[in-house]
Image (cartoon, rainbow, N blue to C red):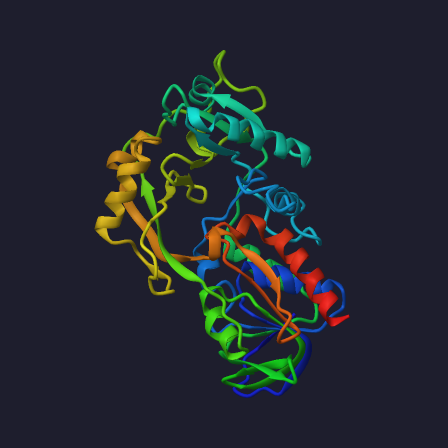
Length: 384
């Protein structure tokens, strides 16, 4: 892997990837493994956009798994647990993953657990009493159930992205240039024009989130994507933290450590809330899905007071100490929404050689190794 800092460039490669986020880098690593020359372009640097603000939650269970024949979350978890193809990626923080459902979601929970088991991972469907016995720091209504994966958890997203690039032998990363146009000739792509010059290529992958829309338009392709607001807060509970993992008669056999004070990564399907421990301290990273769309595609440190209150008001019902916890950090960012709420890898018939991989609605990190493998395979077909 090499990084480019030149002010001008005149280069050629098999593939140009626009987007230095987790999807673009996972694809670059797989293409490099097949000895293809790759140039990655992102003026914001490695994981400088939405990926750098990701909570990094990973698990095999994905409510959309199986609908298109691709259990990508399970494949992604397997790759992360192996620490990537070379074994050099950061180790998974195996705090466990718990996805919560109310009574109406029991069938979804059971089906999800079956999918996880079929993919070769471990999953348990826990009742509300089993959840509170295993994780005393959590509060759930008595009719709730949860899909628990002891070997899932989270990863530091930016460090993983950097490790992916480090594994991508022969990939050139242009972090000081902005892609301005997909160049075509006679119905096929020939490269990407940047603020530093032209990079010629036989195939072009747009994996730059919402920024892919404008670039696709330069090639005559409409790629409808929208942004959605997302904010994550770091809360530090006051006083003595809660109790550790349950060990009484009701504790779940085989439950992992759940992080400090019995906290696994938690996704609450009933409220759109999620939370996990914040690094190695007592802090908790938490967020709640937002309905605000078409926000600026920027990432900034800090969370407005009103947004802190909105998040706290929801997550305190699952983690009571957060009701009066100190807000000690956070980030205001965005997700990218694809049509129909689903991400997609698309090989466009015209211009030939154009591929897009966008729109995973904030869930791309857990899928990235599988999406990268799939996308690289499609690109290789195009080049062949």
